[in-house]
Amino acid sequence: MSTRVGRQAHDRRPMAALVVGAVWVLIFGLSSSIADDTPILSRVSEDIRLLSSDEMEGRGPGTQGLEKAGDYIRDAFRQLGLKSGTSDDTYRQPFQVSLDVKPVVGKSSVILRGPEGREWTLESGRDFQSLAAGGSGTAAAPLVFAGYGISAPTLDYDDFEGLEVEGKVLVVFRQEPQQDDENSKFDGKNATKHAYISTKLQQAKQRKAAGVLLVNPPATTAAEGRDQLPAANAFGSNAAGVPLVQVTQAVIDELLAAAPLQAPPDTALTSAAAVEKQIDGELRPVSQPLAGWSVELESAFERSMAQTANIVGVLEGAGPLAHETIVLGAHYDHIGRGEFGSRKPNSGEIHNGADDNATGTAAILELARRLSRRGQPPARRLVFIAFSGEEKGLVGSKYYVENPLFPAEDTVTMLNFDMIGRLRNDELTVFGARSAEEFYAFLDRVNGPAALNLKKVDSSPAMGDHFAFYQRGIPALHFFTGITAEYHTPEDDFETINVPGVVRTIDFAEQVLDLVLAAPARLQFVQGGSARPAAGGMAYLGITPDYAADSEGLRVTAVTEKSPAAEGGIKPGDVILKFADSAVSDLRGLMDGLRKQKPGDIVNIEVRRNQQSVTCSVTLGRPQGS
Image 1 (cartoon, rainbow, N blue to C red):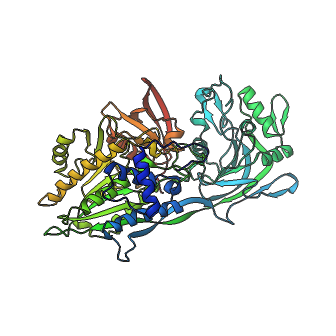
Image 2 (cartoon, rainbow, N blue to C red; image 1 turned 30 degrees about the vertical axis):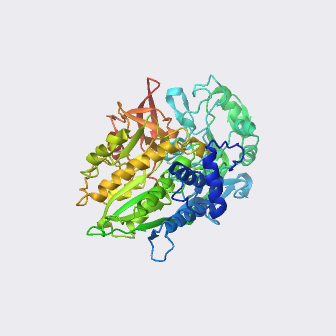
Image 3 (cartoon, rainbow, N blue to C red; image 1 turned 90 degrees about the vertical axis):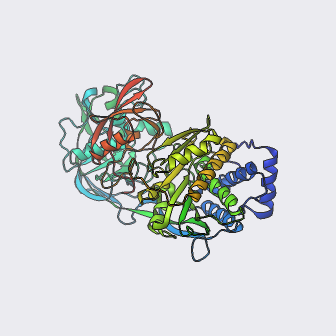
């Protein structure tokens, strides 16, 4: 039985499924497929359970767990008689993904120069940490203390009022004043947009500051028990264009001991704690130059890469259309221990990704079993692809489309499976329903006997591995049962999966596939209605919308951690009504609004939250991956 560090796992499967799974694991090991004569529910259950077990380490890029998952899929394809999609018979199409952003050794430095000719070279990792959110760059300038780096005239608080900061390096506290005061005008104990790093960087950039030295306010470190330096990518890696370094309180205390800040009527503030107490007590800034102190800093960052691979198995067709290809795809990677993309960051727990996307991977394995055992080859070639790198930005599917193993011009359809494990109220969403002229008729024909609550979404949004195929002019359907509370958390485990619902989705998709296989001519591609990803300088927001919603505005189902949306106060469940000055009734309306803006712009986004109108001020980010 799989166990989770720090949290007990409860396996609620029927005993028969447990016995079957135990027998197959004992005989074949984790990298073997489930026998074709095993009952369907049991074999699909075991695929999902094994792929989402702790042994797979959350299938994060660069982990042995992801390699094990790839081996399991490869061995299943091989045992079913599918040939390798690659000429070397490995079934693996290799490529690289970005793992992390770290400071470049030798190009991350902070040198402080103070009164009486003092020079102090700080030690990286002990005294300071360069932060990728600011970006690479250098600065050599006097130091100016700028409080919390906040300009909030409507709250009668402005750290920058009367302060000359152009060309200077700012010293600012993280968070915001009175953060532990229920009665604070900064929304009590709830963080406002002014607490966000991106907001502080935007304020510094607007005022042409040369850089920012960030420091934890003492109240925060007292509560946490230590003054901790964050990881280089803790606040994201979309560079704001203002070099950003966090230093320890001990560093700031030494600066202030040599050059105290002055507060009225005649108070010398000689430590970070004294400064914080002064500002929070009076709720008045004490911004001023740090007399005699200047800094010379440099920040540069590099990305670490990991080798991974798409796993590709092929069932050749026979007949006059055998040269045409249908791709059946699902991503098998996930987010490891939540190092990126987690909705519960820093937990350190394995994010098993049972729904996302062990379920979709199980679907293509089950379809491979069924199609390979029919006794005759299909009318068109079937290429089964387990994609890697999806969680890093659809990397694997993009790589395949750019480097196809079978001619793209003869690839006639793509069926994608991603998060099909939580069928509720018989509701199945299918995206891309208008990407081929024939799809509506096919879906309706199959759904007669299936009797699902089928939501056909015309557009092909950039939320899955189907999108690269759609961009290439290939009709693509994406099967999906919806976002859940467990999405991108450690709780996305096998016991939450509706396995009968997964099987119903597979049955439905198999019948759609049969109609595509039987079509006398290739399906007619339809362009339009897609939600394209941020590209060509389009600003980045960082939400997952409810593409299938039938309501006024655009409902937000998830908000990416530390994204512009999150830092601007947008929350899951909000319904976006207006973006800047334009009404938003659907995804197209939001995309149109984003196209009119550029990274760094601050826009007001009106949302409906708990039947009330709320306006969020959002600083738009750079396109993901840029």
